[in-house]
Image (cartoon, rainbow, N blue to C red; front, side, top):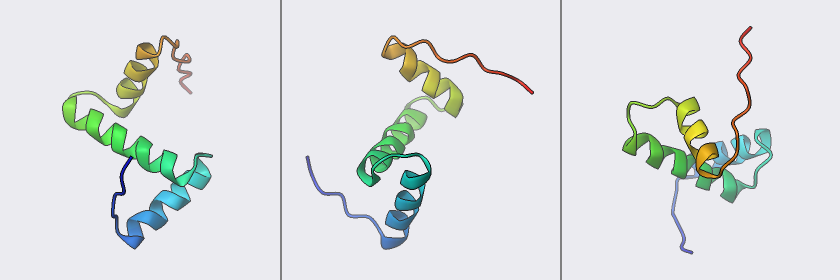
Length: 68
């Protein structure tokens, strides 16, 4: 484990998002880092497709999408 230096503004955005998403600040930062890395490695996939890909990798069935 290491220390990553980020700006105070970004830390505040992570703190806000972590509250909304019911994650710790560290878990929220790790999630954003992971999704950013996946997006760079898979530029043609949408966020939803990336999440579905990760769920399948964990052998979890993604929930059915309900269109309104």
